[in-house]
Length: 278
Image (cartoon, rainbow, N blue to C red; front, side, top):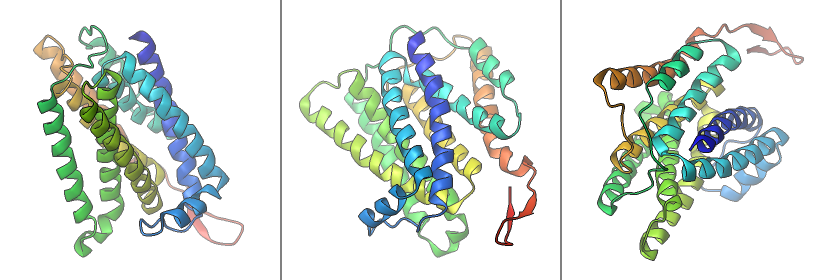
C-alpha cells in the first residue's frame, strides 16, 4: 500500500504538469468540436506543448491504475486532492504543508487495496453520476448559462473522470462476471474519451489554474466518496478524526478555488503590442 501512495503522489505531480502543458498548447488551436473529432485531434496533435502534455497525461494514467491496484481509492484520491495544493504552490504558497500534515495525522487504518464491492452499490453510484453528468451537459448548452460555460465544462470533465476512475478501481480488483467486466471496461473507455474532450474544451474556455483545480476537486471528491460508499473504505475511527479529515479536504478544495482571485495579475505588452495578463 505504501508503494501505491507513493505512485499516487507521482500521479498528482505528473497530472498537474500535463494539464498545464495542455492548457498552453490548446490556447493556440481551433476550439474543439464534438462534431469533427478527427479535425480537432489533428489540430491538438500539431501543438508540441499539447502533445507533450498528452504524453505525460497518458503516463500518469497508467501509473494511476497501478496506484489504484495497490491502495484504497479514497486514499489514492486524497493524495491526488493534495495535488490541488501542489498546483497552488507552483504559483503561490497557500495552505500546503499544514493541510497535508493534517491529512496524514488523521488517516484511518487501511488493510489491503479495498477493491471488493457489491454490484448494487457500484451500479447505483455510477448510475447516479451518469444522470448528474447528463444534467450538467444539458445545462452548459442553456443560453442563460453561457457565461458559466467554462465552469460547467470543468465540472462535467471532473464527473467523467470520476466515472472512469470508479470503474477502473473495480476492474483492478477483479470485477467478477464477464458481462460486468465488459460493462465496466466500456464505461471506462467511453467516459475517459469524453472526459479528455471535455477537459480540452474547458481549458480553452477558462484559465489554467482555476480550470485544472476545479476538475481535480470534482473528480477527487467524488472518487473519495465512491471509495467509502462502493468499496467500503474506512473513515477515521473517532469523531475528531473525521472532523479533521473533512476540514483538511475542505482546505485543499478552498486552496484551489481561492487561488485565481488571490494571484497577482500583471498587465504586460507582448511582442505584437497586445496587452496580456500573467
